[in-house]
Image (cartoon, rainbow, N blue to C red; front, side, top):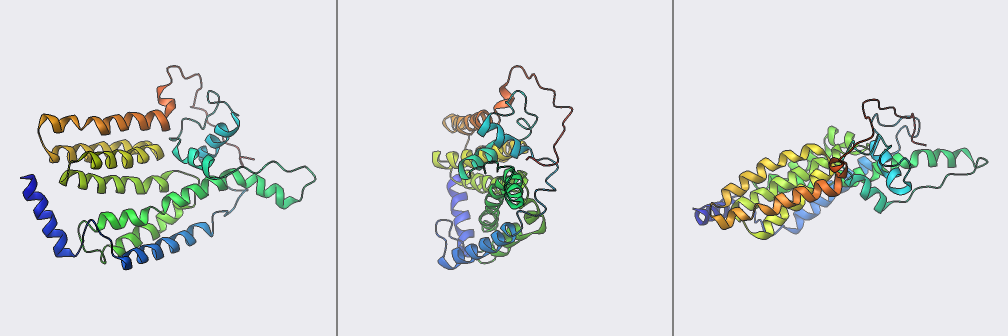
Length: 276
């Protein structure tokens, strides 16, 4: 049954012109063009209204400050348990904070320093949100030809909602691409339940959970793909791989879930007008 399903999927791919193992150079060029345009629309307005108006939930900027300075401490931070830490960790790794200017420094330097905490996070989210373009194409090409999958990539990366959230210091745009990539990996897993595909599913799902808590719902397509891959006892043991990946992703990106005692009350959250 599994071999017949693989042959049928191969014939379906051939009929639509999609070779899952090779991407034509023209398609790669088109995807690069769409990604470049999506990036221009995001990065050209990242500093919009900063530092006077920021997001209503700038928790990632607070997480970055705690990681870099230890202030406020984890036990005293209202921002620390709000979102998984992957966007904050990537922000720390890919950018540096601006030191506080002297009181006599020009106004422009004070404004740059005031917007820097949020702007750094916005840049990280904007880069991650661009993954929507290849993710949308990879998912669409499972059902249509490579060329016809390009409009799906365009709509995924260029929609007003994607651009709107892709310019904010919030994790939603960053989290949007990884579930799509996880579903693509699940489709590969259902056709070929190899260790490599299990690792691919685990990686994509772990990154999704590292961005937003709701990504734990991806356990459902992963489990379905696992069931479709086989029923032998040896095959069932492979489920340990994504299960272990789930635990590790929660441990690395949501360590606050493992705190035995939480001394902070998060019911009274007060946010400053600016993080500066």
